[in-house]
Image 1: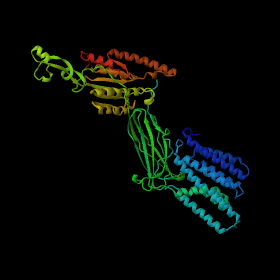
Image 2 (image 1 turned 90 degrees about the horizontal axis):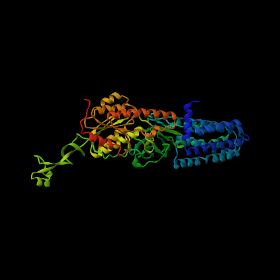
Image 3 (image 1 turned 180 degrees about the horizontal axis):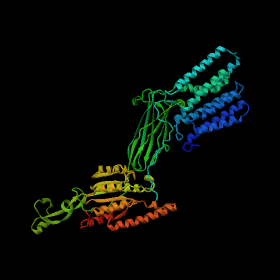
Image 4 (image 1 turned 30 degrees about the horizontal axis):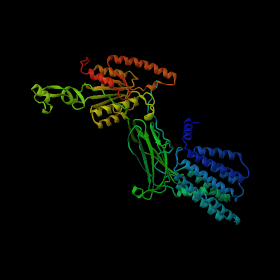
Length: 180
Length: 455
């Protein structure tokens, strides 16, 4: 263990403001809620998933500016894809909202050093935005439910168009995301 | 015996690095990666539920790239008052403006400095980007105004900053950071309470409040003598003239000033300074006492000069008088950095004090060199007073070894002081008002007497 890095971590933990701890607590609680929802949707608990999510969420809360939060989100997404068979289950909405709260809280915590106390307006703006985005999961879930009820047949052309669309969107996303 | 150097390394609390572009943050990578992977999985694996799970992150990723800032913000920082007295406060302001309305949050972290308290205590503040007023130069963009209250608790010239400024776009997806400028903050020492009722010794100047050793045009009554050619008519003492039958005039002593040379020993700073609110170090006592003595004599109309030893910055102040000179004295004192110059031989050569001046040396007398310097001055015929500025509380240490070391050193010091006093150099402990009364009275009394000096 690098003593300097460890000391830096200890200093950060000691300097974390009360609001900072609250934001981290929200993030951790959201990760745990999402984990529970995923496992309930899967029907059984997986030890490695629980340990991985708890460990990564803890690291993400201590170091929100790192990539541990990506590990949390990735594990939950993979778990929901691998273990949840019912595509119309309402647990997916809870999982999605849990991921949204976790992502928002970690991103807000990473915006400043641990000692920062965000003004009420900043927290309110982030909260309003999160509430706006939280409309998406139930809307998509309703749309998925409606489309699934039609029992559509496979269409190679539509699948090709969809893959092309996803690839194009990914390229645009990458091009607009990298540094100038 | 421990000697404490007051310089402390600055610490930058923020992790951000100075940059000239907006960079994607881990939050954006997280949202974009999960969104792309889950949507791809939904299409390839025919799993529409993946779209539900990924939908918030898809929205956030899209929102983030749609609101990605392009132009760099401009920061403008200033400090309310760059010169303070100990214990006074000021406010540091920062205005961050951007031509685009995409700057969401701005966070500023100021590095901690010793003897500088901030509000908030963490010296980290955050603000929300709001539409800038048109008259403030950021039309169509946003501006964030942040402020940190500062209070300086110890004299000195200390840099302020550089602050780390970090701006973030919506959802904290893109980040830009920079370092501000290093501003100078001068804290002038708060003079201790000081006053003296003792008369000054003989003086050489022409203007002032002290009585000269020569008769002349002044206010201090000297006697009544016979009229001489050149005497002013308003000086005629009519009652005596009528009684004697010849003209007599009232004679006075000339009003003249004195030259006070303050010699500041800044070789060592013993003890830990608690600032204006806490226990003083030896240099705190020295500096505040010097300021008090200078303020007193300058207010009387005397000329004051100053020599500072042990520091590499301003070490010499020419004799002047007046309120503006007091500011020079305080400025010079605030620039002292203890122990940065150890060339004692060069210091001895710089001590050329004119005859008739009163030299007041302020020193904690931790090293014998200050006493040697005082003895050398006295042997050259200069009236020297040594003021002991070692705080008595320093010797009371809970550690028995340190307390023993202090005791041994103080015994040695007492012996050195006794030797110096036998040479004829008075030494007084700094106690504020009246500290110098007795020695100044003695010096004034013996100033008229002949003495043996080495030339």
